[in-house]
Structures are given as C-alpha cells and as structure tokens.
Amino acid sequence: MSAFEAQFFSEIDKLRVQLLNNVDIIAENQRAVEETSQDGILTQIEDVILGIMTSLSRDEVPILVLPNRSSWANISFDSAVGLQMRSGHSVTSIRSDCSSSVTKFAQILKILSVIYRLVQSNSYATKRDIYYNNIQLFGSQRTVDSIIDDISCMLKVPRRSLHVLATSKGLISGDLCYLEEDGTRVDCHPTSAAVSISSNIGGIKNIVSSAKFIMIVEKDATFQRLLDDDLCTKLSPCILITGKGVPDVNSRLMVRKLWDTLHIPIFALVDADPHGTDNLSECRSSMSFEAHSLTVPSVMWLGLLPSDLQRLRVPEDSLIPLTKTDENKLNSLLKRPYLTSQPDWCKEIELMQQSKVKAELQSLSSIAPDFLSNIYLPNKLRYGGWL
Image 1 (cartoon, helix red, strand yellow):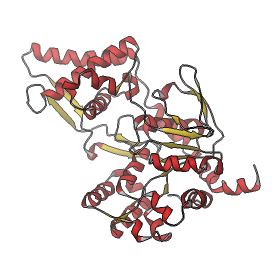
Image 2 (cartoon, rainbow, N blue to C red; image 1 turned 30 degrees about the vertical axis):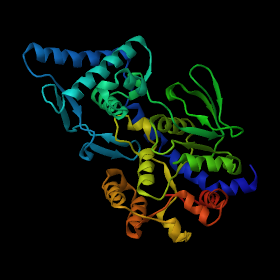
Image 3 (cartoon, rainbow, N blue to C red; image 1 turned 90 degrees about the vertical axis):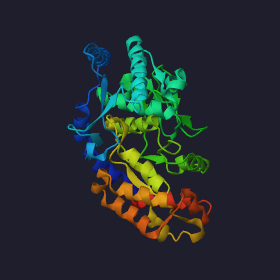
Image 4 (cartoon, helix red, strand yellow; image 1 turned 180 degrees about the vertical axis):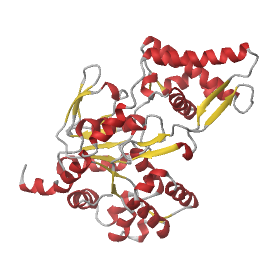
C-alpha cells in the first residue's frame, strides 16, 4: 500500500480496530439464537394446528396468539445485536369468531400450511409466490409480508428457516467475489454493471474481498451516479451496495453477511430527511425476531448530515421545507429506544427539526457537479467525518 493510501485509510483503519473489539460480544449474542431444525419447525406448526383442533373439540373459539410487534414497549435495544423482542412482551389475540380478525386468522393458517409444505419438501418460495397463489385471500403483498413476520416471531425462528425468500431488489458493486449455493461464481468488481443481490443470502460462500469499507447508498440514482463517477476505483478497495430506497430483507442480510465475514467498517449514505434517517436506522436496528441477522449495530452515518447543509452552505433553493408528516416522523424517530445510545444522531435529528428543512444528496451538485464523489465522500472518509 502506498503512503497516500495508508494516510487516506488511516481513520477507517482506526475505526475497524475499535469495531473488532466488539466482534466477540456480537458472536456470543449470535450463538444464543440458533436456527431451528426442519423437524422442529414442522412440530411447532403441528402444535399450532393441534391447539386449534383442541379448542374446536371443546366447543371453544380457536385463538392465535402473536407477539405484538407494533409496540415499542415490547422492544429492547442491545448495542451488539440491535433491536429485539423482550422476553415478557405483550401479545395480540387473533380470534376466529370476530369479524375484525377472522380474515387474518384464515390468512395465517393458509401461510402456515404453505410453510409446512415447503419445509416438509425442503423447497423454497418467494413472498410474491405466496401472494399470487391466493390474491383474493391476501388482498396485498404487504399483508403477506406482515404475516410472515408475525409467524417468524410466533414460532421464534428466522424467516429464512421458514423456507420463504424475499424477492431481491438491491445491487452491489466493488472489490468482492463469492460463490452462490449452486456453485455460480459472482464477480462484483466494477468492470461492468452492478450485480443483483442474491435471493438466497444463506447459500453464499467463499467470500473474497480486500475492501477497506462498505458503503450503503440509500437511493439507486445516487448509487448509479457514484458508479458512473468510478467511485469504486477512486476509493478502491471498497464495496458499494444499495437497497433502492427502503432496504429490502436480502440487502440487509447481505450487509450483515459481509460484516460477519470481513469485519470492516460500514457507512451509510442517505438523504438528510426523515425518510433517509429512518432507512439508516433500518440498517442498524430491526423490529424483528431475527434482528441479529438483519442489522449491523455498528453502521456509521456518513452523510448527508443535517449539519453538513450549514457547514457546506448548501444553497437555500436546494433545500426543501419539512412537511407536517416529516415533523411527525422526526418526533417518532427520537422516541425510539436505540437512539438513546446515539446522542450525536439525536443532535442531527434535532437540528433538522430546528432548521425545518431537508435535502437530498443531489443538492450537493448545486455546489459543484462532481462535489459528492470527488470532494464530499473522499474528505469524509479520509478525515473521519462520520457519526
């Protein structure tokens, strides 16, 4: 490595040393959540159905009991794992004799039957497959997604153990090669178009990379612009990844897989707005049973910071006034448990509240067309400008 490269990556290398001190703690937390065997999952589903049959035989109303995932009171934050369900969490009852819940009761049973067949036959289906299998019953893709999360929490198993895969939308590019489960070799080096993220992250093996860091880019447009500007070469070796907005499950699993394998710093590049901040938090903490495999609590906020707007004197005509919805989102973010351990993040959110403006990453082009890739990001990474 040249003297310039050593100097450029010095702050990133220092950060990596700090992060490695937590690796043993994180590994210990991961060992506490072991995957359930196929027979174990089948038994759990059979127990659910047996409970329903028992209720019917006793002339009682069948009820399904689910953890209440919508209440923050049920969530605790662990700096090594992220968000996780409390052991004594409250529950929601789904009754089969109530007009407001009978449809959900039927939807849960239908998806449980699909999962049972998938696990039994050791085959897989996507969430989209399940939705199109019975559009009339489910009504929307979001309903299927939510119920699969409910079942994951109810059975206390990761979603991938249910043999249900999420459709990938993310892209990845940079100093990275790996093998898919079927033996296909994937080369992500930026000599051509970005690579689509696999739908089966658990099957990825033989990961090879000399990257110094990973950068999560919120929006596809920004990601493509950075590729066009040859950022992967300018800041080589590195890895860029995007979930194209709200990060999908596979993008988040991929980030976690890379962290577990490479143990290198991960930075997030998002818009300086409430939704960007929310997407950032999705990378760091997840309101899910399998938070340990969906998040990396050590993700750093690289930009765009609300304080950057003032520091860089971004022109006012590039700033956007906050809406009432934006203000409500910021208030909601500040109440989330994991932010209490991130005072610097809170200050940035509060600054956004006070300034009453937001900005997209594209606003930096009002300073100079190549400001983001040639000045902003290199300086941020070289001088440790992250939170």
